[in-house]
Image 1 (cartoon, rainbow, N blue to C red):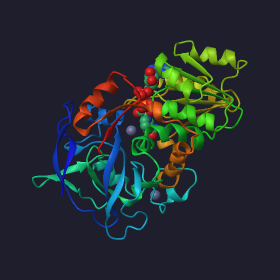
Image 2 (cartoon, rainbow, N blue to C red; image 1 turned 45 degrees about the vertical axis):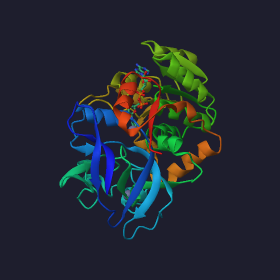
Image 3 (cartoon, rainbow, N blue to C red; image 1 turned 90 degrees about the vertical axis):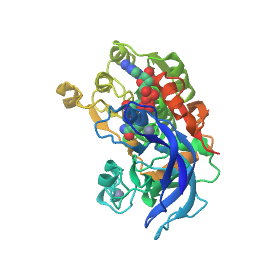
Image 4 (tube, protein in one colour; image 1 turned 180 degrees about the horizontal axis):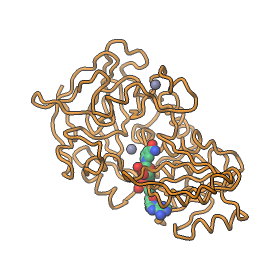
Length: 368
Ligand SMILES: NC(=O)c1ccc[n+]([C@@H]2O[C@H](COP(=O)([O-])OP(=O)(O)OC[C@H]3O[C@@H](n4cnc5c(N)ncnc54)[C@H](O)[C@@H]3O)[C@@H](O)[C@H]2O)c1
Ligand SMILES: [Zn+2]
Ligand SMILES: [Zn+2]
């Protein structure tokens, strides 16, 4: 079938919204009609050419929500009409990592996905007979996409797709960092560095876990206000004295849990240094630039601080994204402040511009 899609033709150039061909879903694959898709930094990062593993041409987009249109042979977990969220981090439920409660890093299709292919090593996207590669296994800047069954989370039909698509990436990452990775305990003190989509999700996750004090740190007053809306008890403008301030306010010890959601190694270091002696846990969520390293004084670790990383918030997507969506449906999570602009697919490049200007948290492409 012919569909409209936003194609990255050349790095550093605006995306080209044009017609491409999409093949039928094969065994284990599903055709999804997109209803909404968030515009995320990772799309822009690849479009800019800064991502060393990027390739072109490809159809970008990974924060999708849509409806199952048709399924390929052997697909049993979704049927036409189901509402789904797309997962760049799949869950096969069979590999050694899926079998472990300690990680969400499914091993099933990583290699082909990273190269831009579906699990069988081919693409369903093409133009005039020339293959176009998939992006993050999702390619959701498009009216339709074909994806592996194991990369779709079936969610409540009640969920509004514009809100549901937020759970495909940043929001689940932040929530999961607090809920799954750090397992924040009730009554604790938490610090979240960065109040973008990910940091705001982490603030909400800390609140849902029953944290007593949640300190949000960012450079932007507007974003700090959003953090307050998600449950931050303190909102601080970031500065070189942030660590000292945290130590001072915690009897000299530091916070029980710290979260880094900026992608800056200097802030990661602050997050480690602000974690409590004895048991403080620093969860690194931001993605640093290629080749950058995190400097930590080892004594901080010997005296009981711990550092861990979190990919997609440790969320096992097919099991847990539907549960996270229920938080919003049940009124325990207000996602509306995250949707700042609704745009059409043709305006995807404006979505990038808004993001570069830090205008709002998420621009959401709607297709209906
Ligand atoms: N681990 C994962 O699976 C995963 C998934 C999605 C995104 N990410 C990463 O998470 C990070 C955050 O993503 P986002 O979408 O929220 O980005 P964002 O750019 O919207 O938010 C980052 C925030 O950090 C703030 N900031 C900048 N410098 C700061 C400083 N010195 N101290 C405190 N705050 C500062 C900015 O003002 C901004 O509000 C990025 O690095 C992104 O690549 C990781
Ligand atoms: Zn994303
Ligand atoms: Zn797996």
